[in-house]
Length: 218
Ligand SMILES: C[S@@+](CC[C@H](N)C(=O)[O-])C[C@H]1O[C@@H](n2cnc3c(N)ncnc32)[C@H](O)[C@@H]1O
Image (cartoon, rainbow, N blue to C red; front, side, top):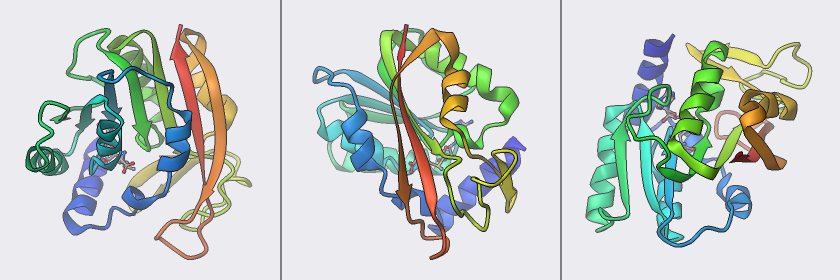
């Protein structure tokens, strides 16, 4: 499944059909970020075009993004260099299930739309990797597809018996609030959780809901 996913994301970035990059999640995500000192270290997993990374840099944080698509990582690094931000930000090729970074490095890990594409069997490893790379007391901001979604590519997540949905070779999971809490488990405490509704550029009938969760490593 993973290679099919990589092909999907690679093609989307190459052809500019990465509709998710333009979903207007940033305002809500910003209001949920914990207050951190300037220079705090943030890891953005599944960083894609790096738009969220750049927002974090403007807030005064040092940011590392990882994504498993080399094409988009190179583009983000070209932009970082062009903007003269090489000491504030860097993008790396890497898999969130084997993050190529040291233990206890980050004040915050952000995930905007990656976890929803993982196999359910990989959720525990994903959480272990976020836990490992975070400092003690560090935060996770997770933004994922929500089961409150009315319509996404014709899928009504509210009425489905499971959050799992597959289309065009890509696997999606639409989470309940409780599922997110359970996935992160006893090693994290939930600080804040919100549902927000968005349009997408897939289809004028789409009614996408995202679940925003801020957690803290205990
Ligand atoms: C829906 S996109 C979101 C991109 C970006 N965070 C944004 O909000 O625009 C998901 C991203 O996660 C990346 N991704 C998916 N699975 C991954 C994995 N196992 N390790 C690293 N990156 C992954 C994809 O390449 C893609 O860029």
